[in-house]
Image (cartoon, rainbow, N blue to C red; front, side, top):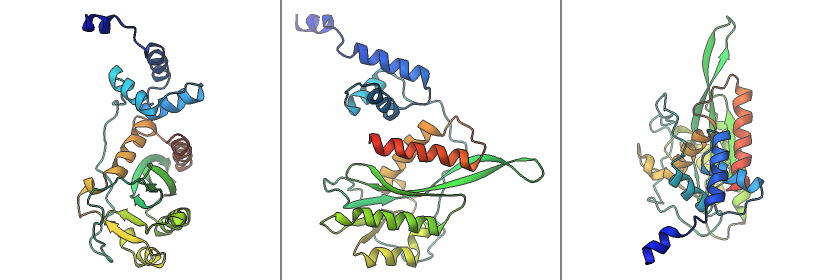
Length: 246
């Protein structure tokens, strides 16, 4: 009788599932985060994890994309000081602004050269994330790998996290920018521990890797961008959306 009653019970998520399907039909590149944001805009009071479970149940995760090139790597060998891995994949913390991680990723877009030919160019993104709540607290964007943009984003992240009562730790991979003397000195100057992933081990910074994967699923894969300005504006809009809804 218990199982019969269970099967006969009405689906409590029926209306929500129908609305999620409608949003997904109208926006084929929306993952559960953007569906959640759209539901909130429409006045639905719902938990993000509930939306994620329903999206998985309905089998409408964003999968219609392919990786067309190798992952960007900023590793150029030992060009400065390599810091120890202080996290060892212990990413969780209940203390805001205590554990910060960063990484660099690239996006491609098309442009026209002086001879009228279509060429591929790249845009680089440098976000800093709070491991406590996965909030992006600062970021930089440039058309080429830029120490200046990384330092600007770092300075903003240091300023925002200065309210932390505990000693902070900033984590990254062993990319050339994070080995710079200026980068290491700025952390040391502010009494911040520096931490680095082991060489060639993306799992040591899986939080940021996961963010890049979700972000590209939702606004990049399957879309062609024809200028730096167009791609940058889309990333800026996504960052604002992510920081509002995270």
